[in-house]
Image 1 (cartoon, rainbow, N blue to C red):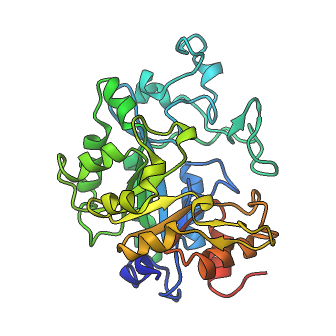
Image 2: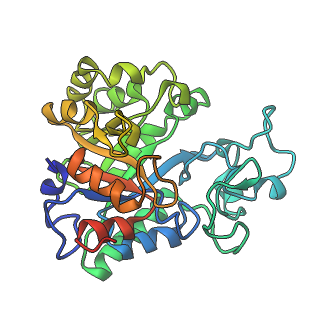
Length: 335
């Protein structure tokens, strides 16, 4: 229980934190308060005391790793107005079609979906023009600097996005990202970081062909989400699938609905089999995504959701848009 928290006691946890609590992973920074994957949001997450700060990574046309959740630029930037006419036939603007110099001309805004804010009550879309797309190196420099100036050591948690897509475009994103991480002191299991991907085929390649020695997490989604080609998440959730993962990776990153659900309809969540099955194999479990403004139907409050994660599912870590609220609850100061 709480294996990851014990491993990083005194390493990635803020001073005074309970070493036995789950680790808090700042999902895309502090997106409940500032646009996702901006340096401002990452600084806020660090100030909250997040144990790890997440970086979703895609590549530019000239092979530079940048921090952005999607392989397309549409949902979180003003690309359509800055580079009108540069969309592909599907009407989308792909990051890999733009050089870093061009990417730097864009402004990052609050995520939209179907022309409307993806979340109500968050940072106003277009409310500022100061946010830009950071490179992976810029973000690592920021976190390194904050670790030095604050005296606490926040870890990093990069995700390699759509590696099969990148290879089809002629770029090996995994090799590029591993090189940048190694150059910044992130390469071994003793270093304060995890590397994650939804693509099971790529996770295996990263460990074997690319010789990665650090902590590796297999993210788990639903087949209907179409997250990775030729990956059967239903199989990976089975005991046999988990055994295959345990032979390669150090942990799994399941969706909340894979580990908790109100199966009997009594208004309280029950633990599903995935978490104990994985923990029996020595796998760390970091579940996603804990949001105070988008709760599961069975959770009447964010504290109830967190309590179920800690006491019922006994998770080792939480990806959350609200690192401040999660830390407050886990440190004994919830509602």
